[in-house]
Amino acid sequence: MTRGRAVVAALAAGAVLAGAGAAPWVRAAAWTPLDPRADVAASGLEAAPVVGAAALVALAAGVLLALARRRTAVAAGGALGLAGVLAAAGAWGVVAAPGAAARAAARAALGVEEVADVGLTPWPWAALALGAATVVVGVLVARGARGWPVAAGRHDRPAGRPDGPGARDAGSRGPASDDVQAWDALSRGEDPT
Image 1 (cartoon, one colour):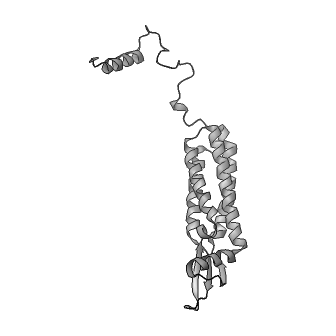
Image 2: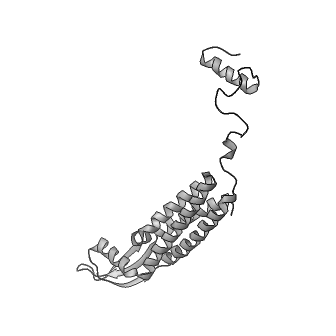
């Protein structure tokens, strides 16, 4: 997987996970003394808050992949895989026991815990599948990042060039030396032209 594809995949996974988390995952009906049937819903972020955290980790990994060197990109791939595991585990927790999320939503909205007609929307299944896909992308990134070109390499000093301001001979003349002398003259308040 190339760096560009990895960045796009990580950012897309984070954005779609965030969108899936904002959608309603569980719907149920509750009874109160004032209303014989009140519909309640729990979003993915309410039912499984870890999905929102996984979305943020995936987005951060995408940004980091765009800027990172090889070792850091490997670590970002690992973080992306971990985000996928967390999202899938959170979604599976809701799929396995939607009643707990429905009761929590009813308690928060109406102050009651008795719910009936608990049902799942397609969103927790989508988050589960997306979490699994994010794990695969994270593994591919972690394995493939070792072969990526260094992102910041074009800004690094070439290996044969000396470092520091005193590394040049005092007698060396060239375009770079003239530029340095011109800047020094400006610093002293002289006009180098």
